[in-house]
Amino acid sequence: MTDQAPALDAQQTATGFNLAQGFEATEWTPGQARGRVTIRPEHLNSQGIVHGGVYCAFLDFASGLCGTCPDETDTPDRCMTLSLTTNFLAPATGGTLTVTAQRTGGGRSIYYAEARITDETGRTLATSLGTFKYIRARD
Image 1 (cartoon, rainbow, N blue to C red):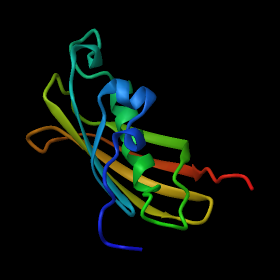
Image 2: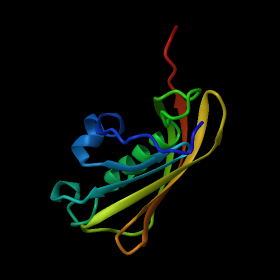
Image 3: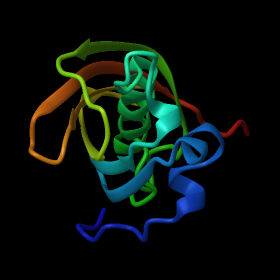
Image 4: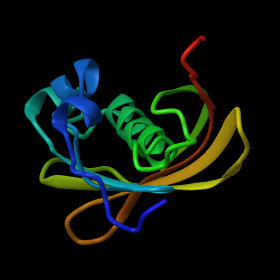
């Protein structure tokens, strides 16, 4: 394992749904990930605040990355979410949000992660605790 971060490849870090949401990984190292999203009108609910589903997806995005860094040769590069407990702490109406995630434990098949979304002032908007299953290539 090396301390250097792998090059961030948009095709690895945000595809499909995550890409459509505008999620972008800004840091990705073994056990940690950081990302950002600029809030767009389609991210808002009928109350004019960021939809809770956007928070959940953004937390899940970073939590999935933090456990699957391609720099770790013995760690699979894909995972699936088994559970994600989310705490909604404050609303946001726009700007750029940042997510940070950290792997907190696990083993060969499953890992655990915690994540936090903050706004541009550093205010915490949402947190999560998740359990993730590695997806290994079948021989």
